[in-house]
Length: 321
Length: 288
Image 1: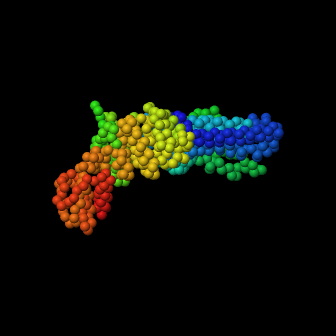
Image 2: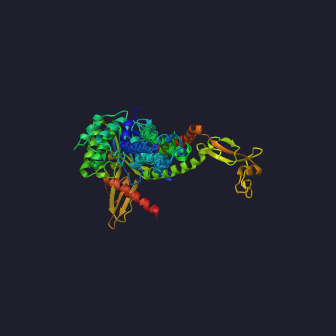
Image 3: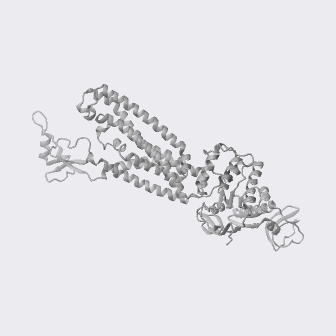
């Protein structure tokens, strides 16, 4: 049975592998050119330090490379939905369209084994391809270090979604979604369209849910006139506390410092705020060291949805005539 | 217990409010070749897919060699469906390898034998490039590789030219002769059926109208012809009648020869045509 599915999926495998080879070659080439740029601009030390610590050469470097690196992250975000649309959706839909499901169902092999084999044999190469591509793109991002998109921290959405277990979790979700849509609607084109639409919708909704998955840590600062948190952690909420330590719901009136200027017109905002009753500044953040936990928590939601879609597909295929 | 190869007891299959099959009971004798006939939409394909276990009956039970079919292919049954589904991008050789992989019991020798019959099928050709006749031959080889004791054929002769039709039937009949296979085949081609079938199963609107040995059935029916205007008085059942300005013709089941009519026994084609015409008349009357 494995051989049959492998043979059926062969054109898909070839496309996947060819696509991967071309993409990896392109990324590695770009990475090599970029590293050469870093060396030429004497910026190799800056990679660990960030833009602020380096001269105008770093600015020039970012002008050239920052958007390209962002684009590479975006391609990692796009990979799962491509797998869902082109591997997941046709998996059962094409069989139903061509009537070949009836061929398989009238042999000794059980429907469950047929489904399981198709599911695994088609999914594994797709997941491996996504993972390899993700790692290659990541090695490029690493080479740019703090001069590239990684400088905005691991929670910045393109960085977060292109790293850790997330791409594989999204791929599994997209693939099973496509498979389920195909098993229910039995039309490849319908299944592909639905997969694309639903994937984008669900991902958009769940991106907003992400920050509520972990109870944030409250960071306090007595410095009222400054940012409490440097770039890196995920800031869920921030604001002011009053003298009793309670959150000030609407601090706007208390931030009115009109007419508090000294002779030169400069305002000591910190003193003004304190006078108005604001005692401390707070930020509720998810610290950088919890990024793996957040990856796993979000991935488990997508994995849970994938399990539901698998069960749905089993139900749809078993009732199929 | 020497159970019938295929037995249906009060089988019904409903799709929503449509009754594809209703109260179907029959049994096929061992080694018989049964023609499954009826107008379009009579439930022929539904019946075949129920026997193959592709679908579950709404009520009633189908047994194959005494074992109830429960939404799963019986190991002794092979089904060739109307669309002749095959993996189009496979070569013929790969298709046969797939057959071996999907079946507990598989004879590549038997499959090859069928592929080599007649003009022979090129085993390295892609399935999608085959002619309709060759494709049917591959599909039959695939079905016979399972070494079935019951072979279900849904319209095996449609879109074949007369020569391919004849050759396809020869492959099937050879299997019947050599291995004693029981065959149930649906077709609209009554002349071809007459040559190979010894039993008949006539379905209309999901019900069995006639079932049994063809010679017996033909014996039981009469085509009676009499002058126009003369009442047809018979203790048999008038299946179908037609009137012209000069004469009345009717297909009658059972009973004696009515007064004033000339009677002959119909051939298979005339018999089936009589039932098909009657079915259409009933539908027209109901539609009004």
